[in-house]
Image 1 (cartoon, rainbow, N blue to C red):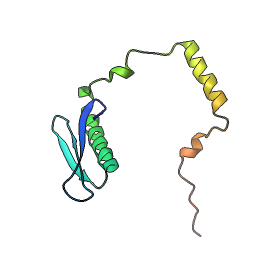
Image 2 (cartoon, rainbow, N blue to C red):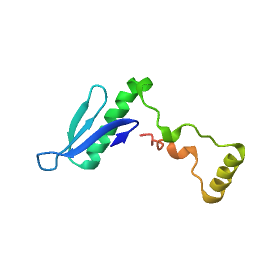
Image 3 (tube, helix red, strand yellow):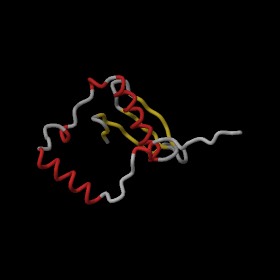
Length: 103
């Protein structure tokens, strides 16, 4: 499998409920997890950590480079979003809840 241009493996381990993941960064990272989903998550996390330290060594993903949206296409996207999202959530949704002050 591949994530952010870096190969990784997730395989079933030898123990019950054991999954082994390996991220094939230049210095390979490996670990075990209790589920396949958690092993995949941990492999992605290891790759993210490596990429944060070595962003210049990431291979660009061919499918996300070399294209752009012109003004009419951007206007069409805006129109679709206005018609589709009828009850938008504002930035206050991202804020933590207000704390009550103890007396």
